[in-house]
Length: 528
Image 1 (cartoon, rainbow, N blue to C red):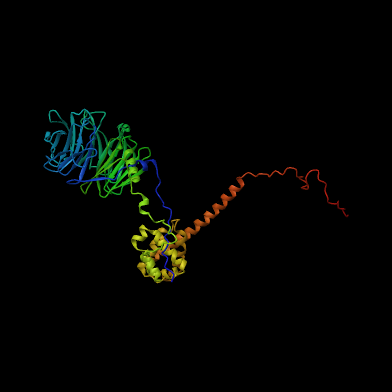
Image 2 (cartoon, one colour):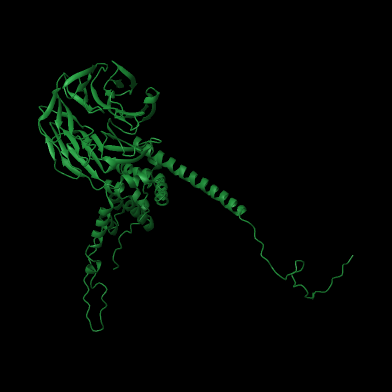
């Protein structure tokens, strides 16, 4: 009895994503290093000076990590309640942070105890930052006020009460010590000048503002809130330039690449989108395991650090040439292939006695059912959820094998509403795929012939059958149109090719004889 041959799974060409320079650049990161924090990571800030340590604010602690350390090199734990918005000063020597208890604390990075305590807010302080002259601090609170503080004297300089809801984000100008921007849950973004008693520009974002970002030239401002990311032209009085809506949930954080040509936005939908700042189209996307609250990029884009709601800090470091060489070296140092195939190609001599070891063949579940001629069960196995979504080529191979055997119609017939709906979903989802269309057209025609008599008994099957019928008709129309286009192209190519005459030297044009050769034909008389 001949042995059963397993179903041959055809290898289809993969429909890979388009590889661009951005794809190569943003995929050139190592596997992420994940660190468990004490609570949700609400803020990440890189030190402007080397070695570019970064401060991570989570729950009642602020941890400072080195560029490649997995343990904090410094910790600030003197907070009575949840800490917010740990920010470095431009010289990297001081760190300021807000707190749920409304007190703003100023730390020396090399010390442990707070150098200054700034008291004046009445509710939680979510915004802290240093001005460009290094001697003042900007704070924003849930008491609807933003304030400027003098560091040497630990005194309050100015209070602004223009917002009508929580102030959750802001940024100071790096070019002018008097300018700063705040974003609030009252849907507005305001530009303040410390030399004036009120704001100078107000922009309506339309959603509660979660993050703001200034371009290095400080002519453009980016605000994030709700599902929208908006770009404003400050030189034109806060005129809106672009409104982006590429996230499915609230955008929580913004970052800019080192060259200023790529804008990054993080969201609660677990995605980080990378935009080109020339046309503001998405050029790359990062996917994470949980909702993202904070995002930061290291100088020169050496690291991408993301803080999530599940208390996980994810750090991706850029690959360098040494790592690539090391990986290549490790690949070369793997055990030699000849170790595993030693003796496989040994040819027995004339006097040798060859003992062959029977090889046990392991058949897939659908192959076992095909061997028993259970064609319907084999098709059901190939239509299981994991197979039809992850490995549709297996389902296609089983359908093709059933068609080759002439039993495809039997396998398709006799199905209940659930089984038929499952089959129709697979056909509808893969029918327009050019790799599968030749096989699925045959199956679709059989299904329409078998089940056309039951139309009207199930609304779900009716909708699917009608949609499948529309797909079949559209595919036939596409094929006809393509044949017409192919005929047109053939005509155009044929007419565009130059005509070449084949030279025939020494041949007479009149009678085809060589010049000088006498004609042997006799002259004919013309009868009148």
